[in-house]
Amino acid sequence: MRVFQWVIGGTLLLAQPACQQASTGKGNQQADSVATRAGGDTTAGMVLIKGGSFEMGSEEFPDSRPVHRVTVGDFWMDEHEVTNAQFAAFVKATGYQTVSELPLDPADYPDVPKEKLVPSSAVFTPPPQPVPLDNPLQWWAYVPGANWQHPFGSGSSIAGKDNEPVVHISYKDAAAYAKWAGKRLPTEAEWEYAARAGGRQTKFYWGEELKPGGKWPANIFQGNFPSGNTNEDGYTGVSPVKTFPPNAFGLYDMDGNVWEWCEDFYRPDYYQHSDTLNPKGPPDSFDPDEPGAVKRVQRGGSFLCSDQYCIRYRAGSRGKGEITSASNNLGFRCVKDK
Ligand SMILES: [Ca+2]
Ligand SMILES: [Ca+2]
Image 1 (cartoon, rainbow, N blue to C red):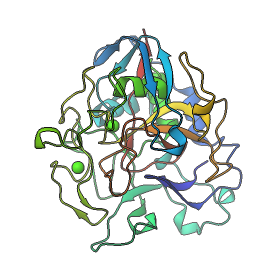
Image 2: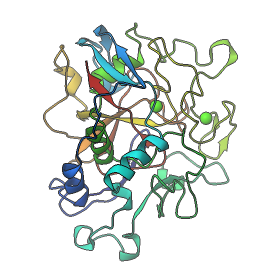
Image 3: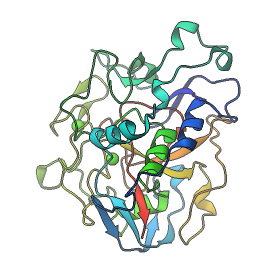
Image 4: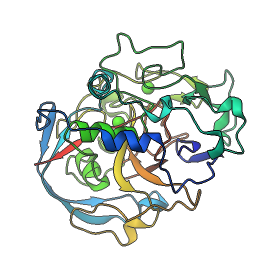
């Protein structure tokens, strides 16, 4: 079941369903019935990541401490975020409907006005003037009809945007796609190892400098958040995949563009007792900010991140999201065992 919340440098909860932990809605049944496509063993468009050891985490954020040594095995990873064209092929083959497209049962949301219980998703809607950064409702709107095919609501479309990352993707949607594609979502450790290209601890995944050589190396946010996007990197919203340079492993947009789901459940204290070999996350989730909400890890930040507000595009930082929630800066990529 869906929680009315968005994760952008923190979480905001508007209303919770009556029985979150059960989470046995229509989205689940759909995902369970998705069959793996024929020829699903292809690694086209993937990069073979040679495993190794690295220093995982960041001392900069309470939930990414301590930095600890982790070893991951070899795996394949999508070279870019899953695109609208790729997701459309999945939907065409399976008839899958994303969580944002499904109706909500009023019985599950006794505290939410009925008129709000229509298929919808969170869209970044900045105010025209500067605002204090203490209330995300000032720049997030729950827009009826917003979903992966209509990123800004029912009047919008993805026509001509085949190469943009698909957005408004919940964890359940991402997992269903991965299953169909014969792939899986990355573990958090695999994701960070790939984002660091196996390298050392740095402030940003691309290095120590925010803007090396005077150029923005990723699609993030410049200017005064949320109203004053100066658009220095050329994109106020998503950018087509492969617009910005790849990292040393040949992977694009690990930093910025859209947040990416990982398979691991979220717990802020997991790194204090994480496995060191191919860690797969804790057995269940717990977020003291929203006890009861089932959350998985998200990584890499988005086009809305900057040092002023959502600083979790920085290397080693972690994001989190309730598994049926989505927004127009949230997507994913897949991995595959070697
Ligand atoms: Ca940007
Ligand atoms: Ca990304």
